[in-house]
Length: 96
Image 1: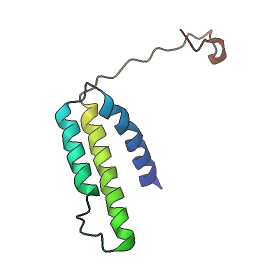
Image 2: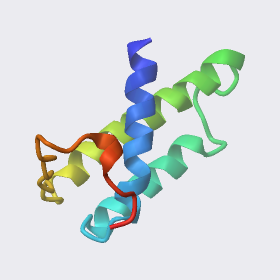
Image 3: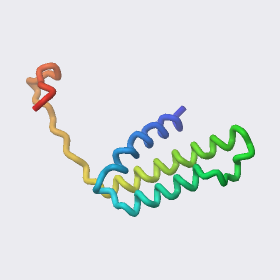
Image 4: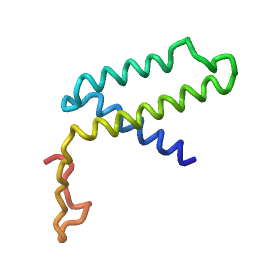
């Protein structure tokens, strides 16, 4: 179950990082080429019905985890503003 949560988190973080201009293009190209190799029809375990799909999913998950860890090195963390103590979440406007 934990692997599923890690996979979901990694995939959800990968999409915005691919679109981010601060992540180097070379890193994006490496990830794209590896992803194409993983999902290509030439596969070692493709003859085994269940294992063929599971190894692709596991490799894509590992690729996403690797990409997120490498891309995070190129992006500076954005400081989060704290809400003043006298303001409740319902008292703020959605458009500022």
